[in-house]
View (cartoon, rainbow, N blue to C red):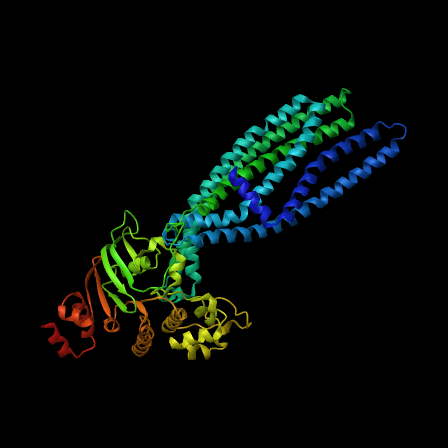
Length: 607
């Protein structure tokens, strides 16, 4: 019941005038059939059994019947208009609520859970439709109840037995529709993964980024086959449910027709014996049909409420999802970084059934210095960055910001103190200026500031030479609102995109910590040298964490830490680690071997 009230409150808040119009339409639609039936009876009786002054009454009843017909004709159109408008407003309101909620889930744990994605997809669909469906169904109950009440009164006056029979015939329909609704809701949940996979294969077939490999490796037929296989699975399950609904609802319709037919035969015999007038027969026929129709409407409305509530439950489940990174009620203010960041005895794994990624990491990132983190793939370097950004909390141990546990800080305020270039940076289908400006929304409309960041990243000249400069769309997915020519959108190379991502990070130039996760992996040798020269100038006196597989970029760091088997295996500056002859020295010599002459490399191997 609580969720029903929440859904109704959402609908009323989204568009109160549309709700009021729907209520008025339901009242008119519920009363008009009964009024029309009574007026028809009076009109027929007045015609077949005339009395003095009957003409005046006949004209009044005929005029009233015509007015009721006009109302009955107009009400559905008003209801459709109000319902459509309400649906659009509710979709907007619910979408805002839903993604406001997902935005408050500060960590990544839920977004990496496929069950949460399934529920989120259902919540997005159901949340947009269910409040309006619940309201419409409840108004259908009101409308059906009014019609049913009026026709049952008429039936009771004409034949109490027939009123009981008509009412009893609705019980099987109510039970059957409830069972079907449960099956529909269960089917939606079970088919969620298949529907998401079908969307995934569909997106791959039309995705520009995947198009090169899809065509080169001849994957179109394979992906299309996977997509169609998922669609066939979905369709087969829905077909089975539709067949069950056909059998169930067909049987119920036969039952209703049998009751109506038997009642009409009885009423005809009553009219032949003089017990019923012509108006009584017409009223009886209209009452049986109206009562059955309104009872069926009531059942459908109850079924609709039940179905909508089952689906709205997914929306409410998302809204009630607790954050895996709770913000303390009295969160400490995040001070400017003075001493540094410390990982103290940090252990981490993504789930209890997953292996340990970090196994007791101890690391200090000193303020004002560059700390480089190196190691083989899969050693946990990116995981350490996620903990530093508090996208996850350590399973054991603590991460300290000037001695304060990150769990005692507001994650949003903490991240305001950071800037980053991630290895898997995002290429937004937006303008060049917006792609950079997203690094700091306060600078989104500040073109000079955006241009400064672009110059630091060495991408200003490229952007300035585009057809619309910083207003050029870096995509061919959408038309540029500033130009009707879809060809005006530009596609950048991987290295050019990396410079845009660097500019995005440089826009946050007043932050306490700069995280650089493989910042030059997509650049050629000259561009890499230039970027790291710029980064070296930019990092001077700043606190930064540099992650790179290219040892030449890490050697200038103030402090280098080697991550191996989930632990800090060794640390120091470049010279000290090279002299130690450990993991770092081996990695450095192995990588530098490819840049030397063969005889020099062989000599190095013999050492």
